[in-house]
Amino acid sequence: MYKIIEAYEMVPNIYCMVVEAPRVAAKCEPGQFLIVRTGEDSERIPLTICDYDREKGTVTIVFQTIGASTTEMAKLKTGDSFRDVVGPLGKPSELIYKSVDELKKMNILFVAGGVGTAPVYPQVKWLSERGIKADAIVGSKTQSLLIMEDKMKEVSNLYVTTDDGSYGRSGMVTKVIEDLVAEGKKYDLCVAIGPMIMMKFVAKLTAELGIPTVVSMNPIMVDGTGMCGACRVSVGDEIKFACVDGPEFDGHLINFDEAMKRQALYKTEEGRKLLEYTEGSTHHGGCGNC
Image (cartoon, rainbow, N blue to C red):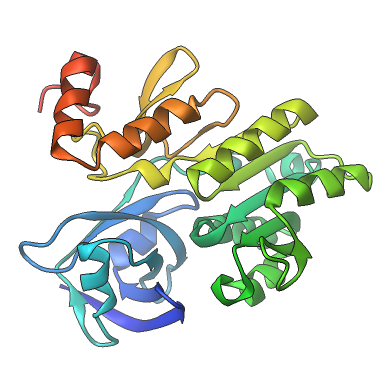
């Protein structure tokens, strides 16, 4: 059992939990994820790690209630426990493999949409701990859904925008990117994490601006091991699986339209069977035979 040290609702339908998981905390890096299971018969849910404390042996997760399983999770309180916490899974951000001197020469822009702020945070925090303050854009539909603003301010040069103009700048995150570039900002890398449609248009814009871009395909993960085929994605001429090959990929090579169509099909049993039939041996990741 994995005890929940802290649990609270950040904004309507978005929850934060600090979980005691010392083995995961000891090994995880920014960009990786874990799988949680509420009870013996509960669904396995992959969630990107929002934060970790190696000394305390804790990891922090942030999730939005969407279906039955996340609604069940949201009922857990401080002092309750998860049946399982498995991780770290996936590949860490490529930034952690670069030297500090190399990173200090780079101008990096992070773009987060909605709950995507949670997986962006450990990356900008990791950079900040090494004396590097990256620029970060956090977008939200409205002020009441904005999360982690204070924490992001501590570790980045933060620009907040809301779709309805209720707080910060007004408009989509792509508008802020255009504004910053127009103001003279030059970026060597953009890391975008959020809804699929947001990442698609960020990648489209940065391709036009000549900014190399990394996106996280965690929104399409289901079982977290590559066996279900849900996170199969075309990256250039290759077939990849977000949970075992990613979740981060070159945003300019992702076929977003195909990925979003698959995401919609996978929600029904009929759609899953169709994908399995049409994709054949490339439908599954992992060993490919399970």
